[in-house]
Image (cartoon, rainbow, N blue to C red; front, top):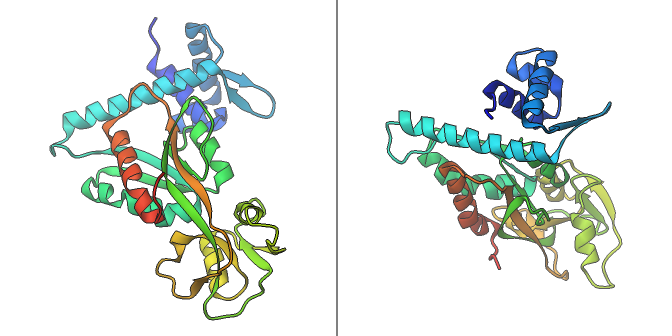
Length: 289
């Protein structure tokens, strides 16, 4: 049995977007042509790859396995072509996409990857900012090659590496007095303040929340004296207008790298994992345990 590359390309585009219309547009073909290619692939394999209903498309278990095969095949082809055409021995090239939430993306992930990217300018590294609840679906849909969460996912199909810990404290403005019962958060879905307060003893304060949109909006709000915030200690570095509020117990969250298990990993993939696992702990300001 031989699998058609056109059919595999159609499947891969649909698996990444979970939308046949967008997948067809990305391949510059009609939606009916895309559907026919996927149908023929399903006939060849003797298996259903997608479950279609009026509201959404879901990939089947067999489809997940085929998606892994397609990703491995693409990685091997990209690496082979680069090795055949590269004139620089040892130089890396290719595309990697790293998704992370705001408090680690800018201050931890980008600095950790910077030396690898400077050394290998042909690497295209796309950094994707999303809040934590949205990140696993990006990995599921193969819109990210790596995601970084503040907890380890429980899945046998995912590889995990502990990068370090975010150590949370309460901060307030060094310059302005602010209400002690108002805490600034990203959004109503942000759980950092709630979990930090829950981890305190019975004297934990009652509080009201205000929402600033993202981490650096929170920092600006705290600096302006609009309220306190529960914030990772590594974000205080170089910010003289902020200070730690004493009297709270330290609260930690695991910062964990995730990617899909594959039978083959490109050299670029391996180097990215090594770079993140070696360097993120330094920027987090904590020790892996």
